[in-house]
Length: 452
Image (cartoon, rainbow, N blue to C red; front, side, top):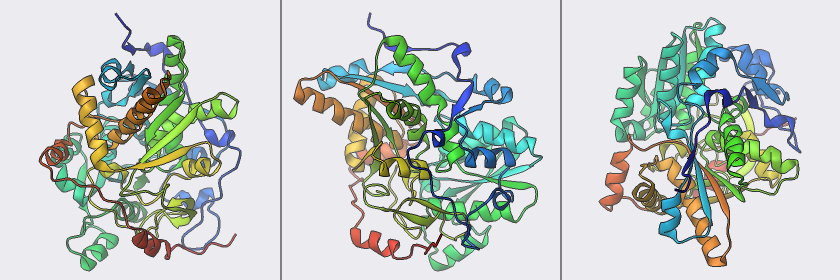
């Protein structure tokens, strides 16, 4: 019988997170305060983040010890399996060997608890009583409500309205873990009220939901803000995925020719890719491929520039690939990928040509997701279908070339709360949407002018 999965024991759980800032050929440009226009220091971030996370965000230290309290909770589902997609390989008729890291086995159903757990822990240690956060498709909101429940904190979630309406059971899940959830834009904040006044039927965006959550945190002394992607410390927490994958692939005697992840804000991609980029920088041969939606193509159509992290100009101005902070993406079903910008770390590594990026339409991605579900049995989240599509395309190239190839991708989450999206796909109600360049140009015309 061919081996279909590698399962590590609790003793193999990574004890450290990897900080790629230590090894990057080009350092990041500093984040800018949206009010003063000056580089941000730790004191500027202290109003919404605990100092432990601020230190992780800014430090070039290569490895960070994972606290025992976090490890104990990680052990509820980690290490996650590395699985070989033998049935998918057979359906494709490819000589490629396809492996995936199965992050759908967490209690919240995705990779997101890898960072929500430590963020809740560090906030509890700092005496914070409540977390305010945003969520797109609901995976981050679910993960943070799980984490705050485990550490005895309250939680308020602002969920992008189009996803809130599409995925009602995400609300049920978040409520079950004790959090409060509002569709964004909401009447709870100044940012939300302004957006509703301008467009009562606004579908919302991650940038707008971030504005609401940041405003909430900044106006309540007992509350901090928490972000599920983009930031350096978030990407670092996710590297437990890639560190485990390195061990698991070594146990199989395999080395990937290509490592693939979907990108929206960048966190699950960073988790699988950053440890492999470390090895690439050290001289190992491996391609790193990031797959984004064609309807929200921040890397492939955006520019690398300073931009606001949110719609209302409350979050720091950061150097990243961006479509412009006023960008309002269409209501695609991969709601977790509907962010106007890309993680600064991922963006910089793209600029340094350590990462390749492609944009794929949602119809092709759903086709890949259904093929994966029917061959491997796992129904993937719409976000994850982008990575699956990337892996299938690489496997078909290997078939055309008659070459063996080892493909590794990150299955960032399951799609059990996304079945309305699959219903729409099967009913022929979905279509592809290539974001018009004219609309991208209009949003980019409003980038902030930063002088260092």
